[in-house]
Image (cartoon, rainbow, N blue to C red; front, side):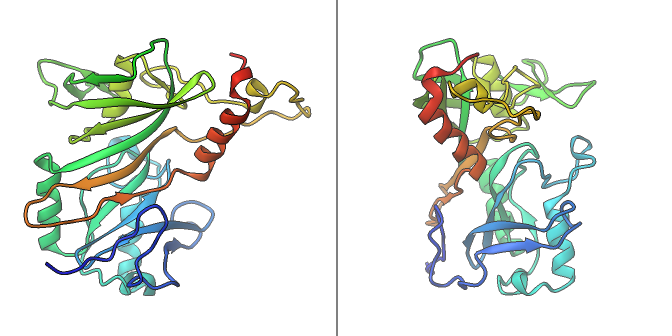
Length: 286
């Protein structure tokens, strides 16, 4: 088996050029401002980036009006962008769908044969998806499980629990540590259905910060958690305006392929929120 170039947690392989740890896009490709994404892994057969929240990676009615990373990558491939040519991409094949609202590991195959390997793995429980989420909960449990089947809602951009038409999926939640009155949780699944982690969390009483579809997970403001904080007269912004649900790692269990896990660091704003809660969270006012 050939050796593989991988990067996890910000440590890049020596086979990856020091000048290309990011894939960048000019302004108006993915919004008004230029954008760049951390290159998490560069393998001969596939690559992965750290996707920010708010960007789509596939075309769907739910994603109308949202910038599409896959479309932007294909456009730059046609333009023979040097950053992408260095990666040796023969074609762009997305391994799985990651909801636009979520951030984290986004994996692409570079070649048709690897598209088949990765998509077969995703469809046969050979990939383990691990999320980190910040949520409030009224319970004291350290471990929670949800195996409720989910289906597309007939009249809206959401999922519903359905034992009649829903697809099977299972999510295991594990408490990691407390941040004031909030908790950082890990969610693990092999399925990755649309909105799966969100709806399963809501069913278990976990209110993810930033959630407004399946539960009310209000965003957190510094004035809530810092005793001596004084408003300056301007409208206050939340500490982190993103959705606190991040695909932090993807692990492989593919026969005859020993592939290292891919890890994506939390968004900077998410990290800032955790630090603020760690420092001030005990005095939080609801």
